[in-house]
Length: 87
Image 1 (tube, rainbow, N blue to C red):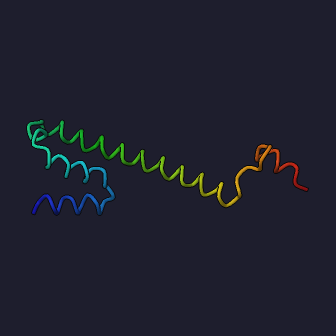
Image 2: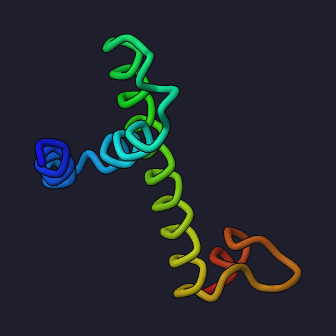
Image 3: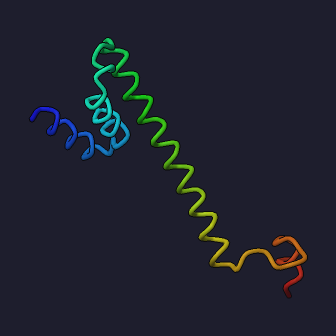
């Protein structure tokens, strides 16, 4: 019950990576032998990785979205050159 409350709190705090890592640690008995600081470091590392991956994903989606809305570069030239050619 305590772990379920902790997972809910982590998700409420938007610490999804830590929550996922905690669930994974509970399912892997070999992590139970690690010291508290080692397990905590793994949780924090997972959260950092999760946030970095999310940031990169959002960046890619944003770039794709802008290219889709603007039609992307025209064939035979760069977007900058096309923009200067417009009156």
